[in-house]
Image (cartoon, rainbow, N blue to C red; front, top):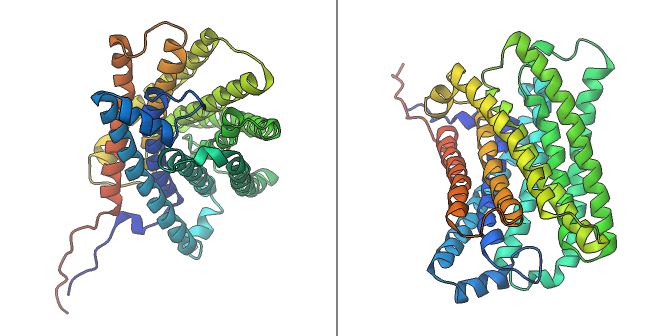
Length: 403
């Protein structure tokens, strides 16, 4: 008799939604190639007609970049959607188990926010797919923005309901939150989810020409972004105090770098809002201010990347959970910081340094800095592929002696 093969992912955790999130983030890193290398003079983002024109009129390097970007977007969008569907199906079954009931009475209840986080990312991925692969989409985009805002509003309702249940449980009475198990940044997952919805709401601010759409999106993204910032600060301060007293929870170590994607997401939100203020309300911010703003965000990201790397290395996390044989769903949290750093570097280089005339576009310094962004992107891709193989690959089948 042969024992059935087992996958680590068969022991389900809501943290597996981070696998979908990571693949969706990589879609964004490939879209950065098109965003900053393909001319799009008639709208704030490149669409199908701009990409087609650049392919026809461009030289070999831009054609290669377009081919790589479109292939990367298609492949990782497929992985993003596939992983999301698997997670939704698995989560539905997980809700009927005792493990789910136990999760709802523990600190880990906040991991449920990984679901709206992944859903919001997939809506963003869908928008990228439409812009890149659907001809004439921009001609009806003003009708799509309200639909996208409704989708993000529904996801926001889901997120706040989950947050409300969690905070209502732990704050209504004392002793229901284990402070000794608060020794990581896992409790920042709700803030990450809300910030992802906020950046989704900010897209129409930068892209719509309808003042009502812009105004509603501006207010909603501001409200959600502000709540995300407040939640991040409170959760990070209390968690850091617990980590100083009890050390960092080993399997939750990657959450130390969750500040990196939060900073990128909120940074993009602010950039979109600045563009909307300029285009719709005639409010102007100069390139120097944008460069300094992005430099400050990168400084925050580098600080928390360094903190996470130091702690994970001291704990031997990479040897055990990345290149070793042990598995933890929380390992997928490692993908987001590298995705986020890659995207933020692209914005800093193009919207900061190039726009402020510190460097020239496509010169040697430009490509040296862009190489850092691409390196971070490659690390994220390798991590996704490695973790997928670890968690979703079947263990070798073993023979069981007959009775």
